[in-house]
Length: 144
Image 1: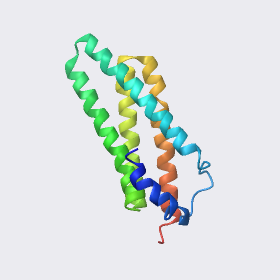
Image 2: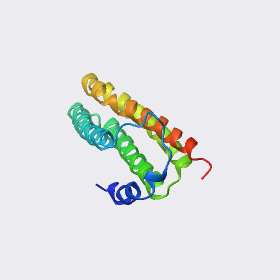
Image 3: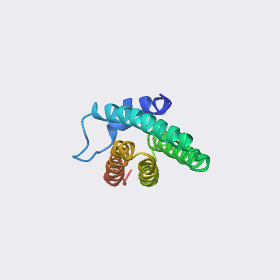
Image 4: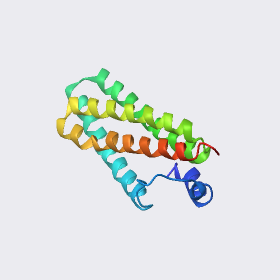
């Protein structure tokens, strides 16, 4: 919901003026994918935090919560940089860092619960796709 504050106006005015790559999914796919992924992040992260708490591993639990927080800041940051600031090149860099952070989050999750880690693996895969999409859009519009 927070991202929609900058996304909605940009999607209605600025975004339609961009040249986009041929592999851009239909408009309805992105909100469905992200909503599903946010639910996945919430469930798998709760499982991980609870699992670490149950084991009494407070140091790893705090480190996981920190990694999750950083990941969510990067996620929101991409939205702000891309849709709010219209900085496609910078957004591609943020997206790449978000992908690396998502890989780390999935790794941390899998160390606690392999099923939750497997479920969360869709997140870094989608972030990698989003990085390719973001970078391709920047490339197609670099002359602007």
